[in-house]
Amino acid sequence: MDDEFELLEMIQMILREENYTNIITAASAAEALTVFKANEIHLAVLDIMLPDGDGYEILKEIRKSSNIPVLFLSAKDDMEDQYHGFSLGADDYLTKPFYPKDLLFRIHAILKRAYPEDSKATNLKHAIIHWDRAEIEKDNDFIPLKAKEYAILEVLYRNSNRIVTIDNICQAVWGDAYYGYENSLMTHIRKIREKIEATPSHPESLVTIKGLGYKLIVEGR
Image (cartoon, rainbow, N blue to C red; front, side, top):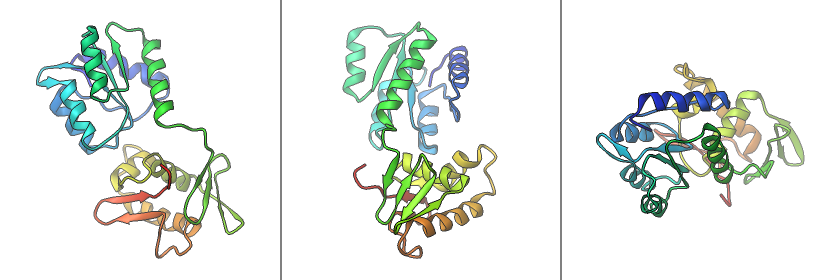
């Protein structure tokens, strides 16, 4: 989020070249908060000086409901500004001007800390997800996951124990042209439950949050 349009375009280009997708930009504090509330955000890059507020206030609002990683990218290079950002819960602080490789390095490091991939298996109440093999282990049996089932579970796992809206799941799995896939999602959810639940009609791991979406319950996260 930044109010310098050329800088926003440059950052988008840098990230896309590194195969980052679903990049959403905002040019004001109000727009940034609207984007945050309407989307499933995994990393926020915030400027501090904005036409209608500052990045510190945005971070305060974010921290009321989310622990997503946040990187400040600002022309304010005073150490007190950096200390203030970290005191509010920022994960890193990079000053302008910056080298693209420096930005990428910091983003890689933040995401690696926030979303570790050291475990290739996830224990659910009645099953184990083996991510590297795209299989479910249940009752001493191994059940293969189809591509869309894997993608849906991956989105839910990245947001373990949190509600993920139907729109956000569909967008992550089917892309921007996701409208109309709600019924397909329900079908895939039913098939996933058949693979991971002891009693699919009474799910304990992949639960429905009526009127909102779904939640994958993973102990220890």
